[in-house]
Image 1 (tube, rainbow, N blue to C red):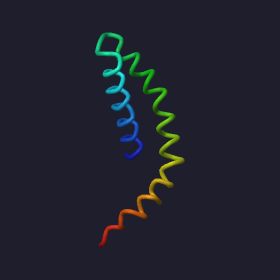
Image 2 (tube, rainbow, N blue to C red; image 1 turned 180 degrees about the vertical axis):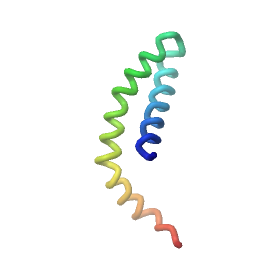
Image 3 (tube, rainbow, N blue to C red; image 1 turned 90 degrees about the horizontal axis):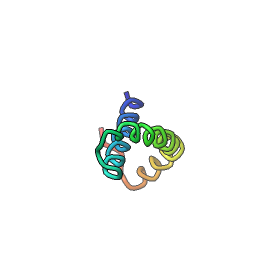
Image 4 (cartoon, helix red, strand yellow; image 1 turned 30 degrees about the vertical axis):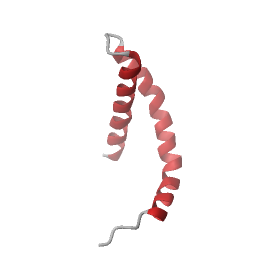
Length: 67
């Protein structure tokens, strides 16, 4: 589920940025797919390698939830 959500969020961000930068016209879908193909590996790399570091930093500033 988390992997699917990650793919969808990267795809949505790529779609919005592509539409804003190039406009909405018949060539939007191919440009969007190209942008997604570039953005997904970069986002995956960032999530896998920087995610644990970001969690440790967040734990310093945000207390764990009390049960």
